[in-house]
Length: 466
Image (cartoon, rainbow, N blue to C red; front, side):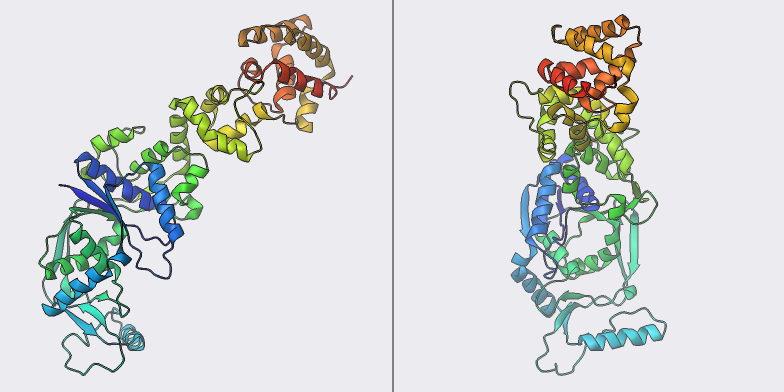
């Protein structure tokens, strides 16, 4: 059975790169009817936090990346790492190293001064020295001195590294906590992970991990190193490119299905398909379609994609997602007499915006009056329009409150006063919404309601000259 995993470190939020790795691992397991495992690599004691762990769990839940097993925590598995380290020590594939930090720093300085690559020199590898009193050793792998560490990467192809290029890496630190390379290998082995899917910044770690597995006479998983994600300028992705917490995208008003779709297209494709469902991703996902070159993060493309999903989304669902944004802006959109129906407002506006936050901004005037700017008043509250507006106000007080009837009333008011339709519709729009750009004003008024429309017109009539 296919078994994949996502193994984040809880030293920060779930970012775009991590979310894409999780998505690819999830999609591959789902396509093949396998299992997707979540593991929290919390051995960085100084930086790991409960808050970061929760942020990772929240981000995955929002994206819909459900896991079958876990979360497992490395700090709860220390006894297992010690057990395997003892096994390697007994088999002669590992040894205790008592070198102090100062000794190692001095060694590296000497190597740099000699123009050599800084690396552990194996001073305790076969040492017969008496261990120094009171010094807690680390455990190092006895890396082979000749031969090669080789593996077939499902994205990059054959990768081979000469063992002489690798030094004896630390497996267990002096405090008994495993290093990344040791912990990840034992976890993947114990959890029967068949496919390790991760960012290609881990490629250099893999030969070391291969040698640990060989020392344990254990099978290798399949490795797939996916390309890095860069900013649109080709630089490493950072906050200035939009590399914020996945949860931040929720707070900014993106739909989870849009972000999943966008993440899938970062370094993977299925023909020319741009918009596709989670189910289609699972059906189509394959390593052969992963690009080898870095992907570029484009916030404008994500906005466009989110807009496509908003357009087709159920407006009742979108209304509920938009409600918290309106609440935060002081708008009470609770369903009650005299208040526009939020799902209908959403249906009117959603094709004009990119995010839920923009949708809420566009809907504010439905739930509380907005005072027009002085510039809009000067531009549209003309003396020649006042009589037409007064005439229209009387018409709107008695007309059937339906979009077509409202539109006809505006047309009649313009015709009766020898004016073009926009010369009446625009002042009306500004009076009632405080904005110059809205959907058709008759559709807006229908939702706003007769009483609120007339009330706002009356409040603004005093701003007309004459």
